[in-house]
Each structure stands twice: as C-alpha cells, then as structure tokens.
Amino acid sequence: MQFAGSIGMLMGERWGFLLALIASVPFWYTAVLFYVWDRDLGFRQDTFRYWVFVWGMFPVFGVVEMVYCFVRLV
Image 1: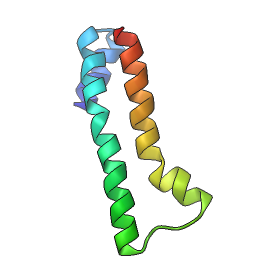
Image 2 (image 1 turned 45 degrees about the vertical axis):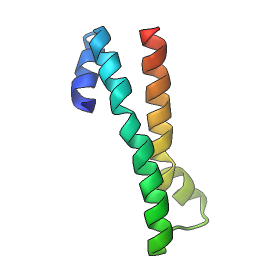
Image 3 (image 1 turned 135 degrees about the horizontal axis):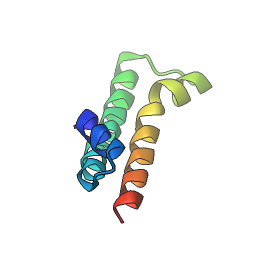
Image 4 (image 1 turned 90 degrees about the vertical axis):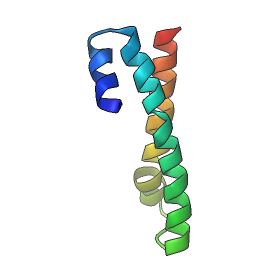
C-alpha cells in the first residue's frame, strides 16, 4: 500500500494520498510492538540513539505521513 500510495502522490492523484494515509497506520502499531518486544527481550536502552533512531523513527514517520496526507486531502 505504501508503494502504491507513493506513486499516486507523485502523480498528484487524490487516491494516492488516501492510500498513503491508510498505509501510515502500521507504522504506529510497529512502534508499539517494538517498544514491548524490546522491553521483554532486554534490548531497550536509555540512550538518545535508541529513543530517536531505533524506536522513535516509526511513530514519527507515521504521524508526519498521516498529517501531510490528511492536509492534502482536505
């Protein structure tokens, strides 16, 4: 869905933005799963690198993509 939505956005089609908006949701769920799994497996670290680059990239990308697509659709 992400790939098809990206193509649609590049073409300037409304369906592309809608598809990308839908495809942004798994990034949020992935972040929650990583947070729980990292805690259970002992991988979580209290470092800036972990919270920003390892864990934080997924929810931030999902939120930014969701907001951008929503604004373009409205």
